[in-house]
Length: 332
Image (cartoon, rainbow, N blue to C red; front, side, top):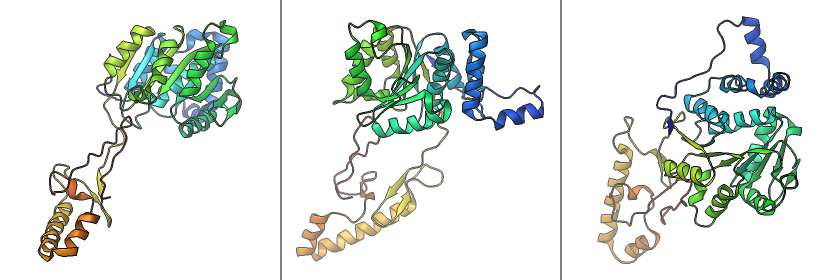
């Protein structure tokens, strides 16, 4: 396992470059840099592709876990990447796509949702140009012979089914070197998980897999299983969260930070609201009659009474991990 314990920046512009060279480099679009690298590969061969070359297409420094994953990919391994949301996992797939396109081969990028596929389609066209990127979903079939093909995961599973027993030149996987499985934690989904499982099992051994997830619970087991059924696989993990999470609690009247400024205690405003709620409940019970029945029927007029056993209402767990359905309090 390759763990990026310190995600310090790795790549920077050479200090020997002149100011005019740096200025020209910054003015180039990402697609121009990709095109330049592709032309260099055509002239000098695939051997010039390394992590530094791939990092040079970006106008920022890449993180350590991104470099580790890119290096593992360039060695020919499949890669499982487990890193927080917004940490830059897509960059790894994009760098792999640059290397694949430069070699004149194809890469498939799969997502679990049509909307996400459409988003990646737009993003990758900015990097590789409209003519080099295609889209396959249940609703759209655009440039399906492109070198970079974005699709929903079920589309790829169906392509694998159709290619079984076919000669490589006649299958939909002809010239495909890399398959990206975004949101690979869907493996644990009760209704759809078999789609990801079948893709990994039936994927040709010569095709590299890049599996991305922010919420996979058992990355060691996952990478070990892929290594067993598919081939050499590296695990790259990172715990650094570049976009910190902030927790808030919503009532029917306002939105409160869940914790105080130090992040160690429940926000005092929530406690005050709980005291007010408790006082109103005592009064309503004393009043009795229809008012009590009405209170029971409609529940609390706030959503924060399920924090830390602060109320007598039944607790409802809000689990917002991507592979678990979200369930909210019934009184919300």
